[in-house]
Image 1: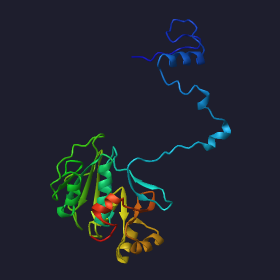
Image 2: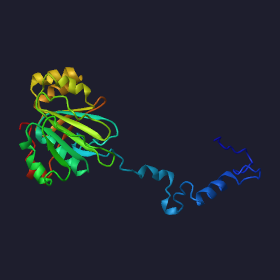
Image 3: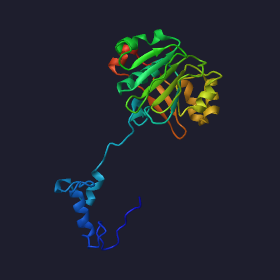
Image 4: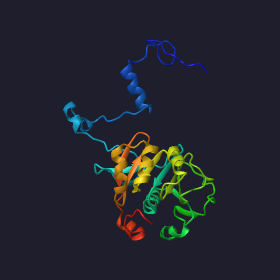
Length: 261
């Protein structure tokens, strides 16, 4: 099919009659339902010197995992149409808080773990696995059937040397891998991840992470002294410290923030 063009002075019907002027034609199309008319009342108008007073709360959508150094919300966008891998070198407490909050946003959470007893309290609190969280043995996570309407977070809590997972990240399926400490597989996982979180580690581990992640010296030196609940999150372009403050319900279920389990 060829595209129809309109010469100046010709109507869009192509019969040669002069068409209405551009503004008049635009108004006619809008009245017939093509496009948006927009605000037409004086109460929607502002003067030029009032524009600076307008502000829109624009930000990423996702899981609020804490507050950043400026005191603003730190949001982790887990539900994405592209594969997204996250690695946390830290404690189980933080991963469980993220899992709870991800489930609260409507995502399904599939936990692959060698210590299912550590997750049972959460499963029972969320309705026995019927309300967004299910626990599987290592290597036994089935395909999740993800979509934009049913995003999934796969949490891999498989110890120091997690095996290669049968279920990997994909559209609308993020994978969060927990490493309690560094191990020989850590550099590979860190390099493959889109986002890496680091909690308190030993000075030797901090030095190794500094080399692997090209951390500035000040941040590398700070890692052994991080307080419970504080995480340094690093992407390819950004680094920020995030403090995770639990809600009363999270304290009742998981206890206070802690690095060690």
